[in-house]
Image (cartoon, rainbow, N blue to C red; front, side, top):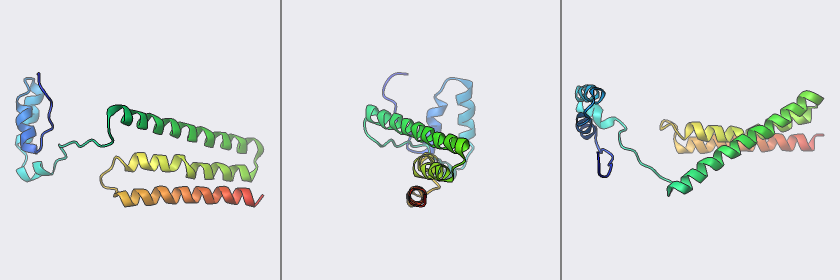
Length: 145
């Protein structure tokens, strides 16, 4: 297997490439794919598009995202620990606000970014509303005590 690897552009081309695989799993998969209707093959997401730049830039962005997520969860956890020790309502409000401000939007971005069924506008709306609610809860905790 030498040469450049290219992405199949259609389901039929993918089925043809799978038939060239010498092992029995590839042959069985090719038989299964060949039995599918052509209209169904055209709708299969067999083409992969990558966006985001060079590999080091994408890797740095992913690592930064996960580090920020872990730090946001740790800060929220510390607020929850403080609330459990003191039972002070403002600290609980800070914990809820911090969660809505940072970890919740990050998890929404992570989950909805991997689903094609969730449109980009809905992702932006959910994350922005979560951040807005987080800021409002934090402001409420600061100004009511």
